[in-house]
Image (cartoon, rainbow over all chains, first blue to last red):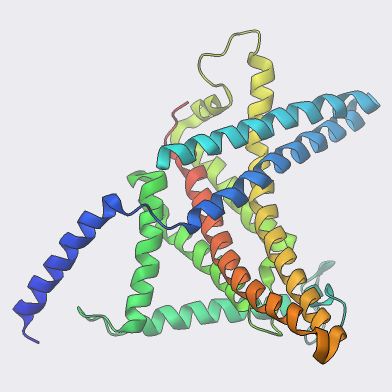
Length: 93
Length: 244
């Protein structure tokens, strides 16, 4: 195949790609990825909050109280995480 | 064949026991499959980029797609400042992807179905991102814990919430990958066990489920690698571009 022929074909394909980049709404699979993401986001923060509460309780000897408080703070952090990642998802669309 | 669906996750020693200062460093099937993964990746990338042509052959095309995919992911989520971190994210993505995919081969071992592996990866990313943030912005990096426009009364509470949210990153990153891989492989094994126990008459339904699940698991294997890499990009973006 002559080199020139290939170059024009490459240019046509590149133009096509540039045109498609805007209209092509990514791959559908990334939505499933986002769904997986949100679930763990919520649970992880609750778990981390509770663990921090448990450790602080052991330190200060205030047995049940800090773990309860940090459980709720962790839940709040989890919701914050979910809202944040949902916002970034909306921005990407 | 082992009937227990969890026995596929057992870590067995291969060869002699090696102990270094009380730490068990024996070669296990997990290490074997990590080696297989790394060798496969290196061989693939070497062979596919050996003779670089303008018109790529199929192998070269595959690695170019892989390169473009990761490059686009980084520039979309973390911007141009994240370009220097491309090699790290590329290796991370390809390693997790290959581990997941090699785990789909029957009788093989899924490295990423162990939380210790995913946790080490996630903690490394977490510490690296934190260090990068402090190196780039100094103590101003701490301002990500203090969002703008919050009343002074609420500030201590919000800061604690932000810190917990920040600390939950490695947990969610590692648990997501580990849980998805482990759950999927357990499910495959359970349905496989149903096929055996129901025999020739009733085994067809779980067999068809097994086939469908295998397809789903390959999708999940890819997706989890993708999510792992894209979240690394997002965290990197937070560290590089302070904006709240």
